[in-house]
Image (tube, rainbow, N blue to C red):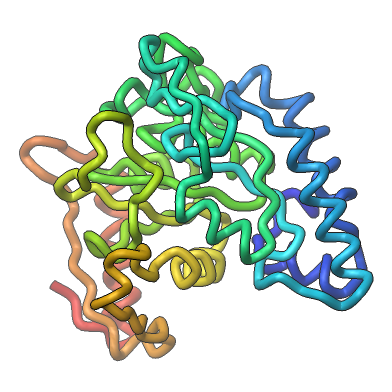
Length: 294
């Protein structure tokens, strides 16, 4: 089913002329209209501007003018990222009037690579919970079981990906805000190294300084998409770029070169035996194929 393909495969369909950017956007918007009311994963739509972006992508494609690896791919971003003309609230009622004047730097970079951003996904208040509820936008439900939560704080992002409502997502993480909902919803997420990806446009005024341990990172339906997105958003901002240059190593494809740390449980967050067994099974598989396990 097209809505559940990876962003890489969606971009390939567009590039090969198998589907147009507007047609692909309409496909996702139709699913959002039908399925999102029970999930409340996508809480702000930017449909008019997204359609114009998609039309431009189709016109460019007709001329063989490809913007980048995400050309024509519809995507959403976590509510905490700025999108020009839309509120950034972090789930706080008193911030409903905080209207962004420009997109977050990371969002702009994804759009420069061809992504068509059509909305924002839900968060807990102040991004500070392992569930996704806030008094502005309400509760997000897990698409696998709507009586359960999707995790947090990037819960809306993970739920939208798992339900096939969006092609790609952008989240943020301090204490598992990407990893926790990715786990709960069965999608891919990556917490990059601190300061690897600039957080410009992911702050509430007046607190514009970088938060300790806060990172932004991609969420997707494939590991390939994580690598593509990370490469796009990982370069320094304008100020840091004067003295910093980032050269990311290629992902290791040989399991024997991997070092894998395994944590099965913790005193402050005990894990069910069935989950521990699955983690250990995965670790044994890595060890069997030559990875170094700690």
